[in-house]
Image (tube, rainbow, N blue to C red):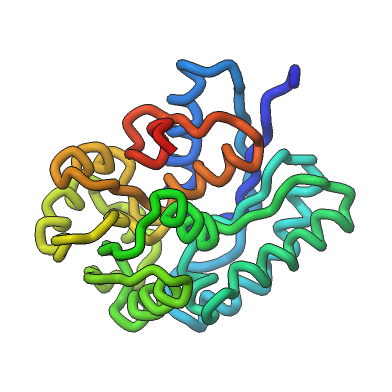
Length: 250
């Protein structure tokens, strides 16, 4: 393909991380691979991470899919995990189908995915049957995320909930804080750690540090989203310093 590949994301209006970490990973990949990328977003209004605001935000997703379809992007992904997982088990499949229908109705053939589905698929690629997770959410939403992951056949041994409802505040978390926070997490005997089960909580600079520290696969929703994007585009899933899932091992 002579032109750059167009990455489309449906992003909460207060999210500042997915348009940072996804490009950072793919720009790093450009240093060793020939493909080039451009980045395109459509936004859904959301300020506080509460179930009520998440429900209202989800209703805007179809408009966003149509807008990205107009740009003829090469892949479309949602960029909010908890908005999907808070709606009940398996909801990412329904969302993906609804967004796909809108894209096709607007003459866009791009594969459509969700960050929630990407996390499940990424853990599957790692062969993870038991995990521990870090989240920025208040405990009730964290529990919904845990229940969703477990409904997909992956046991969650332990979870930390930082209790932050303000989405902008979540985006301001120092990712290197997670290097210390993970020490409070029970990771004994798990197959993998999800350092950020949230696309807004920054974690990329900490991923490789924590993986080297723990000696087991460490990933995040943003990393799993990037992996799924590369798979959909038929590209080698390799990004330096982004953990085992993007190491080329799988």
